[in-house]
Length: 67
Image (cartoon, rainbow, N blue to C red; front, side):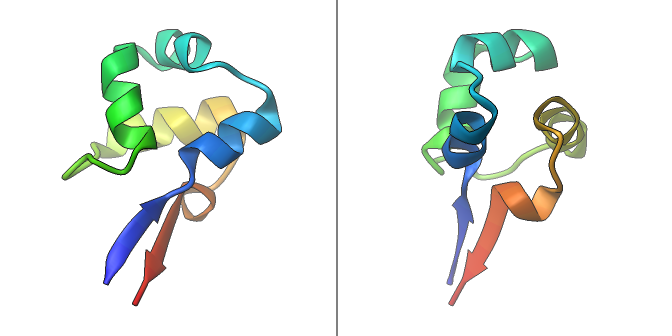
């Protein structure tokens, strides 16, 4: 079982760069990269809310559970 992070897919759909998104939501590019690659062990709800707000999406668009 794993959680797949589809942040890079949503960023491509919205045509936004990592640097621009990181700046808009107030995190470093390094932390955004950790999220994009799926290496993060956790994500704050405030960060998830900021991502959803900036990308105009739902949490389920960014996170996917696979058996």
